[in-house]
Image 1 (cartoon, rainbow, N blue to C red):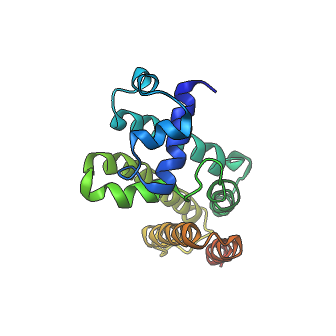
Image 2 (cartoon, rainbow, N blue to C red):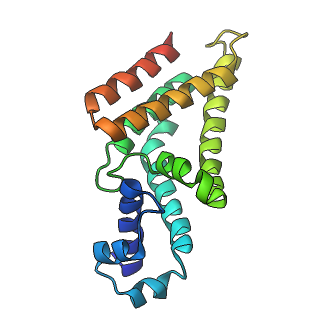
Length: 191
């Protein structure tokens, strides 16, 4: 792993645990063993590092949550697979995101202090909601969901439930509670 990759990786871990504001450059230097010059050789500022960390976090999310989604044909089955991957391959990743879902951590923290950075995080969350809604629309169009089903309402419920599961897991680290919550969402979708 290069110095730059190590800085991004360790910063992701620190931002996940402490947030962006509470993570200092000194914290990053201590975690990586890099010098100040080594840091600034790769990043002009902590904000520039934020964008690199966010891109790395998005890559991890896509790699884990979207795994094998193309192997599933039915839209509701795709959402179930996505939820299972989110639970089993993403949220429990204590190596990369020991504090839980980095996007939730950053969205909540940055909203007031750094709205332009929060907007970057929220773009990804909005894109994910659009993806869920598109899958639900596909299910309705295929007759799997009743024609009068509000896919927007179901999207909001699934999304909010995932956020709640993430928040609770970041607090209690209970894989049993996480499994129960995600299974409840899947059961709801299948009913």
